[in-house]
Structure formats: structure tokens, C-alpha cells
Image 1 (cartoon, one colour):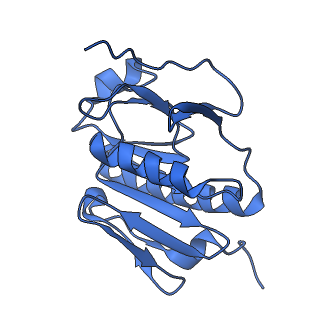
Image 2: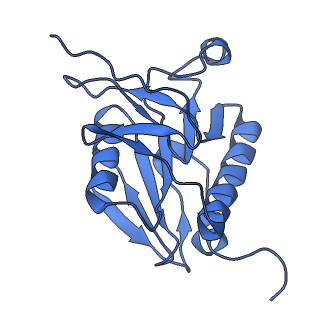
Length: 180
């Protein structure tokens, strides 16, 4: 077919291949870091209780939708189940050649809408079951899956069938810990 995978060198912040070009991820600011950390901690706790896979931040994946090139994507937070990649393989494979089951992307001020749409399209086409797009500025979470998308607000609790039994209050992604 003549399609060669796109491999990107190690860099900090990480590099991704989106819309036919290399993008460097942004070092997170406070609101981005808070939302990413809160989601990650909740997801790690959920995976430890269930023993069903691994959750991680800034985890490199080599993602390939059918009929397209393989490319590097680095979600802010990802969950990959042992059902899709057995634990033994996950222990030795630092960069999975499979899309994660669930992806969390936190919108940064410089993110272009077309790049965000493309990353969501690629993840879903490659087998990701759900993408949570967190917008700290608007204080909403948009959930994307194969059926469509919908928004959640501060008063909502998020969850998805791809993460059976996982739930998280949306407002916890945007509020500093401690007393007011």
C-alpha cells in the first residue's frame, strides 16, 4: 500500500502527528494540569480496584485507523484495558500499537479546533471507544463516541460504558482542592 508509519523522536513536551504535520504538546498551565491530574487520579484508582487495565498521563500510542498511516498521538490521559492488550504485553510494550480504550484531552488555549476534531476522529476510527474533551475555560466536558457527542456541565457526573463503573463529578475537574 506504500503507507509508511510516522515515527516521531522523543521530545519534551511530546510530539504528535496531526493533520499531516508535527505538533508539539503544550506544557500545561494550572487549569489544564488540575483537570488532567484529577481525571488521572480517579482513573488510576478505578483501574487498581478493578485490575482491568492501565491508566496513564502523556502516554505515547502509535495509532492507525483502517486504511490510514500509523501515527504518534499522546493523549493527556489514556486508559488501555488488559482485554485489548494483555498485561504481559503491556509490561514489555512501552508504546502500544493500538488505540487506547478511553482518551482524555484537555483543551489548551492554543489548540486549533480542526486539530482537536482530527485527533478525536483518528482515535475513534482506530478503536477508541470514548474521548473526553475537557474545556477548562468553559468548564465543560464533551464526550465523543461512535454514536455522537454531548456536553456535561459543573452539576453533572461523567461516566461512559467504556469505563463501566467509573464516575467523576465534572466540577471536580475545575475546582482547586481545599476550603473556599
